[in-house]
Length: 547
Ligand code: GLN
Image 1 (cartoon, rainbow, N blue to C red):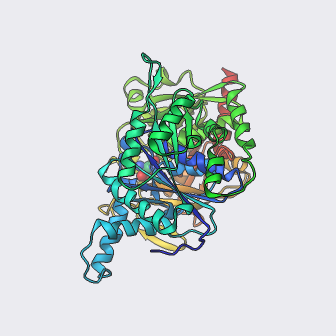
Image 2: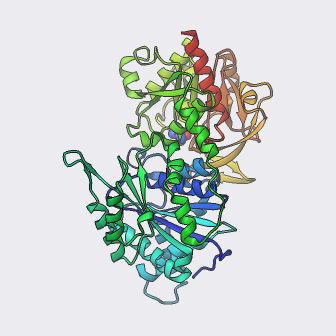
Image 3: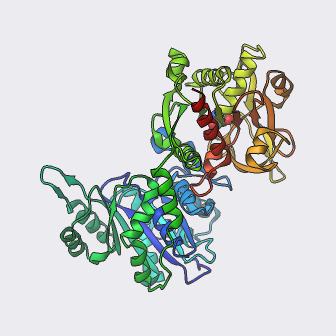
């Protein structure tokens, strides 16, 4: 077994039962936040049982947003919750999938590392899972590991076996199992039902795992007699059957958990004496979100129907609203509808227009129309990644007059103002790509530095001239169009340090028109709202006052 550096580190494993989509990621992030509020150092990890090596090639309509870390890992969107709730940047050591685990096992097998052994799920796959959990730990008090999926899934079994073994090897006094379940409310009976929770715990017990804390999602307060019943059937102490009520917003969850005694029970379990959780910063956020000074309407012109595909974006807009004491109302607009029916009918009543990232041709003409509408009507425009590329194409087409300007991502015969990046610099090393190369893990990924033009709007917004932002794209605006863009009223005000890659464009004559090649939404946090989102929302509020 891998030795972990700090034997005082405690491990909390979070599993989910009954149904999927109970918000296990949020529950894990909230548990981490309340432990952090008691002064503990924590680390959060996600173990996903699916076979993709990472979610990078998965359709966001199925799996939601692909979150990108500073070190360029394409990870599950739960890592976004983790970072937003704790402020701790996640790394490649915090996210794993069965695909990656198997890849490691098979690489070792090819290398001959197993010395002739027959490779099996137990012990080889489970050992690799245990290695992942125990590796790269410094002086953390707690490592929280969320197991993706629902107990009972075939894919999840090796994970349950691995954490069962770990609890045995490290000791139960250093490990805790938290199980998140659902208590459905039957209105005709006026009752919460505990049976699904009992069954789910029975299933966990079959795998040799006895939960220590049950977090029970419920639409109403759980009566004490129901808690007692769950405790008896599930072998969990009554005070450790914790109500996880549906909250007003995700930012209300940590204080609600703490009020229910979650952090107190964790401390008691491990015999830790810690000061009470200081939830003041969370309370402040609750106050701000509950008493906004007004509403501001932002159009998001995208194409993925599943809102989870825009998770970080929604949060970043909310943070921008909080910083301005305003509530952001998002008007979701399908880019294909704009294409069919024109921009005016969808955009004439909004205070700001945001075109987010995306892949593929579908909807791009609608996004270009949205950028044109914002430019011509002086409405604040924020283009992110594909949204920046579309704004550049719009200017080259309609202001500079090159009618067939486009991106080689969708059209091999256009004038490729946006083209495939075949080489760029990463930490002094040249990265090379070809047109027919692998799609998985080969984009320009993770944090890159960017130099801002002095006196530009973005330099003013950031309050500095060197920034670092996270990327996830394969195409890039071609620098040779800089003079043409400038003549057409658009300046490139952010560039890679070698000056070869345009990272930010803006229109100095427009109230607020900024396009960025990176994804600022990935770094926005409720306690540290991203300056671009704060400024964009402020511009939208100013716009609403003009109307
Ligand atoms: N499809 C575009 C590219 O690869 C934009 C990607 C994105 O918006 N994340 O460059």
